Image (cartoon, rainbow, N blue to C red; front, side):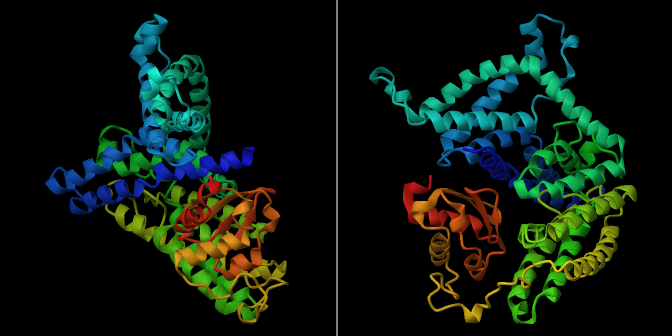
Length: 498
């Protein structure tokens, strides 16, 4: 597989463990709502919910190992997830400070500090990637009859545990340098204070097209470089008591996203709708309304971002800049809220009574300002540079005037099977597919010939856009139904999709 394709798979796989975070946010947020002053000390139910959520947050490294191994496996089999778990347990046990001291015959106090942080998401991703590669290569191996019981999938966790012994030996010398580099990068951003938070947010948006924002997020949101912003924020009183959180500081890598996702991007959607040609406004309105609501309510921004990301890169650069400014403002003024999934209304409500939430309600007027900023700047830039945002395309074919010979129907059933059949037709059929998968709102396709994909037909089916990463790797942004459509396409084409 080419480099871009593998990075895309990594980005998709990372969403498996990240998708667990809303469960932690809901439980811990509910606990803080029930007991906003005692944070569980004065209410047994609140304590129960907070501790249940903490059980997820405190084991994120392990969840990354299991989730990434499962997400990268060729057929999403549980044996791959088990191998990721085994690999993580072996590697982190062998690299515990006391074990390192024993193996290297040095005093415990001389063991590098890096090994005290060995149970982190970075190591979890590494273990998951290695375990999935072993699974993909050896899950069909047949051993001699005497060892036949251990053939196939049963062999994978055994091989993974053996490989991890070698990896642990290498990591014993390499990890202190890797960890030191990550910490130095994180500390350089932390030392910049609010400016560093803004710089992070700017690059967070810029990396979304290739799915590498997850790697950047792991440095700031999780415990890769000692920042651990999301778990420390969700930890609330516990984080404060343990000195892991600072009131008004913890959460600054999250708070400024709320004005953008809840208000800014819907403002951009309104500007795109108003700039569309009159004949196309009804279609654009339905697209922007659905995408804007998803962004406001849940913080899922891909449907609206991908609507202009590639057709108008200038707008996307402006969006990244405005996001950085928003995060800087919130961090500078100590307007703090956090999230377990994304910066939408649901997470804002859940975090409102977290003891680390500071003046969170000020993010709402900030958001209203950014709604206006996005609307007016996007409107000006679209018209000034005649950008071909949705509804302004030169070759736009209105839905009600599609040729009778068009192979993809203009009006299709909303049932997933019918949509899957239609999407299968516009990507060249089963014979053109190497791999098909999904990531929240996108069909991720590896095709023999990506040029076959009919973008106009995809938009008539309801897609926000088509992203051509190269000749083989193509993504179609279709919204929350992406996973369901991907599974239906796999069902239609059978084993040829794997």
